[in-house]
Length: 264
Image 1 (cartoon, rainbow, N blue to C red):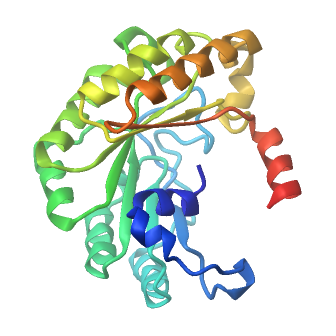
Image 2 (cartoon, rainbow, N blue to C red):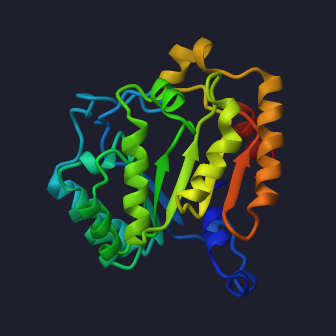
């Protein structure tokens, strides 16, 4: 799903029906900015599109003056929706100050995190600051598959982080990347997301980029596995309709880019 589409999905039906039509050339600023705030990460996932990891912060990441100068420009242009990702955005030394600034300027902000270290205090603070949602990657319905996918990761810590967010009342999204060793758990993963209190579940084909290029022979499901995967997702979409949104895209990265070039 595109960011613009996600904005429309989150708006009331009555509001969507009255949105004025506009061409992209008529917009003075983007509707959505996804910001990789750091390349530093506490994990080293096999499929990471950014090749993030411990000690992998970029040498030229923005300093405090540059960070808030950029955010001021974004807010002055009234861009309505941002996301902070990484790497692991919560490791940025100015993370909570950045969240406070954006939310204080009445923009919607989503945090994309691995959930490790999402303590009760951090979850409560995100709630008090007013983030739109926190998306946590949960690539497995069991400890065995999750830990195999997310090197240095811990399934129990991710689950604990999700539970802390739910207890704090923070809206939760779950993201799932399929591989040879977790593709069979998709039904259980959707069920688990609902049990943990998520309002949205996102997945699709794992992208051939970043670390995945190096590990593709260990990661990529066969086409028949993907067919079964998407069959389960179609069934889960209906099962959870009205209770949790289940979103998935069936095209691969290159196929989707070609489609968008031809039809957008």
